[in-house]
Amino acid sequence: EYHLYPLAAFASVLAFSEVEALVARRRVVLGGLVALSLLASGATLARRGHDTVAAGWVRDKEAVVTSLVDDLARRWTAADTIQVLDTTEGGVHALLRLGAQTPTRFLYDFHFFHDVRHPTIRGLRDELVRDLAARHDLLVTIEENVIAGGAGSAVLEALQRHAVTTPVIQLGLPDRFVDQGDPGIQIAECGLTADGIISAVRARVAG
Image (cartoon, rainbow, N blue to C red; front, side, top):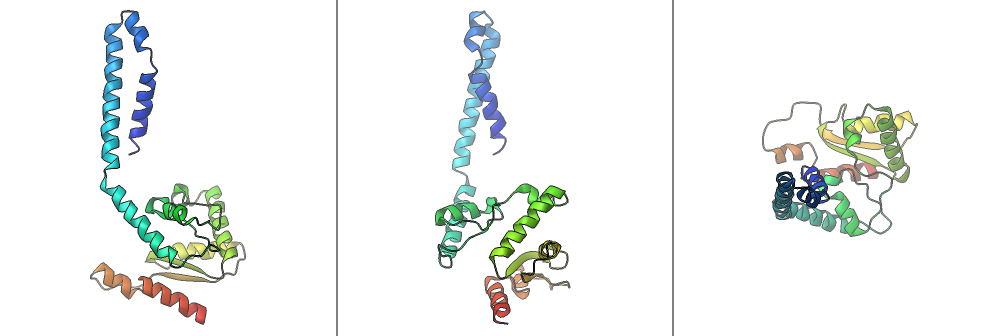
């Protein structure tokens, strides 16, 4: 609903405009147009606000956050930290409900994922990876993408640049043709289900 913000700003300007002064100077037509614009903007904002509050995505987000909190609460302790990488998927809401802290100074930032070649962004991304590696004995990268040249590879490159030796498990799609079929079956075949991820981590830790 980002388009509501400029409309609200426009309505605010109209609200503080000199409608009364325009009418007093007998500029009734201009004053009337400004007043009508203000009323129309207010009505539009009210309607859009009502639609937004009643939108299905609000209920969907609430369900996602509740699910995250329930899932994390079974594993999380007060001494644990949780790194949020995407504020749009309910991670920050779950973090606040749990009262958890992040291990780094970062939350999701749009530029982290879209301006990856910018030197400043690269430096900040490296700092994020270094901070995570410094607080953990093992890093696990998970992606619905081919492992070769993916996010896990970028993490390894960042660690190598700074001579950090924290081990990394890369979980993702194999560099081969995956049989076509139900997406759930394909994900399971690649070991990207919850059980598959847990098994991979346990195997690495045990080994």
